[in-house]
Length: 269
Image 1 (tube, rainbow, N blue to C red):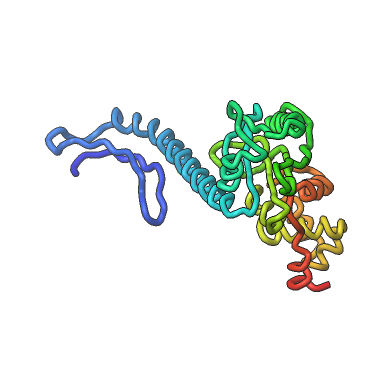
Image 2: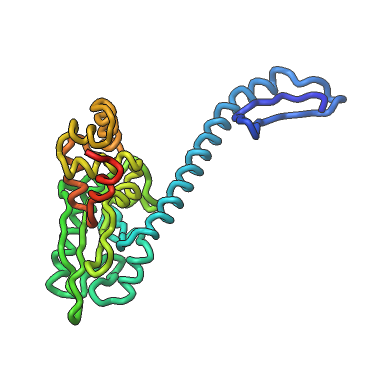
């Protein structure tokens, strides 16, 4: 390589990305006419690679979230801003395929029981509008009645705000469906999947629901009140809430059980 001008875009311990222009020895050295375009192009190339890296990380995050959603003990259905179904895990797919209490009609959830259909439609539409920034509903809960002597399914509909992308569909609302006959889901597990709360943040949220006093919670977790406050701020940021009562209300709206026995074993009074 005899005559070249090179613009470095990105580098790390393993790779270097650059843009180069070269010409043969007989053509002579490159002058300012080659350096100036390279100087202008290199920042754009750098930004392009930065955007690509962010998109790559988001895709990996979405794939990880989808994998975790599949492991939940409840059916999870994601709704877009207009209330149509944007995605679901396998438990939800199996539930809809059975067609005993829930079905899809023109891309929207519909209860097969006529007495449940109107309530489900109102809940999903209002929650989706709120998640899209066009409403003020806090969501709600209802029972989906099934044929025969089976117990009704419990349904929780909630607007979805998160600082992390749950999936590529960017849901505005979630429909969480549980079967009383099955093992209750862990609320801490749901918080971890939906909002990327750390295990410590999940424990703090659970204890807030149990104790409702930050100083007592800090004592139970054997951390300082300052650390507890920092974790609460992190929970606010991840769940899109602003006051301590809001994540508590969010936790109460989730189906499942609080892991009290877990706290008593690892975090003695």
